[in-house]
Image 1 (cartoon, helix red, strand yellow):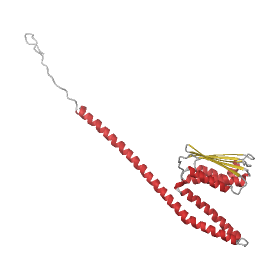
Image 2 (image 1 turned 135 degrees about the vertical axis):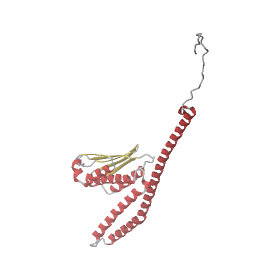
Image 3 (image 1 turned 90 degrees about the vertical axis):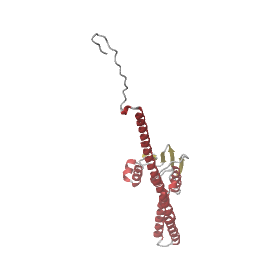
Image 4 (image 1 turned 180 degrees about the vertical axis):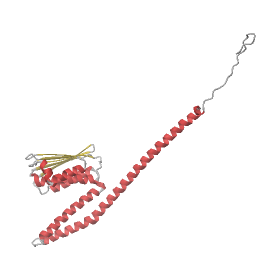
Length: 265
């Protein structure tokens, strides 16, 4: 707007124009950017989960291959070495009977006992290698059977109580072996040293936590002294440590012994 010489105002000039947004402010470009970000995020998440699945698949395949190898070794040891040892055991047993009244009887009988011990160890190895036994229920059943054998010729009454759920709970072969050997050590100590009338073995499984309790009504002992003086007690503590298990020994002279083992599976 302007004024002339007569101070008359002229008509205002009006200009109309549109302000275009910058290139990165355009709607179509923003939509493309959001979609691209979503697609990239999807691809990254997909790749991550594929890598996780690939690792899990590889771990599963390795575990399956290891299980098959364990099964193969177990079968070969059972069929070859086990059969050979059983044959030697039978021959020495027959020979010891024939030489019962001869000077060589003691030597032959000692050889027979050594072979029997080797046979027992081989059976334990086969049992621990066999993948079909990788369940707590199998461990409980095996311990029950072996405990009966340990007390078979003793004057101690063995009372066994097992409470293991029917739902399969896996335990590795090495853990099974260590648990059994620990329990065996305790039971052998009861037979040899406790002078008890009764022994009690309880095996329980609660929420993937294995609990084994062994007690007797024998003479008991001083745990602090026995821990350092006897190999048996040291072995029990050592096996519990390998298992990363909680071990408690409660005993005193004339009050029997109670041993509890708690293991997270």
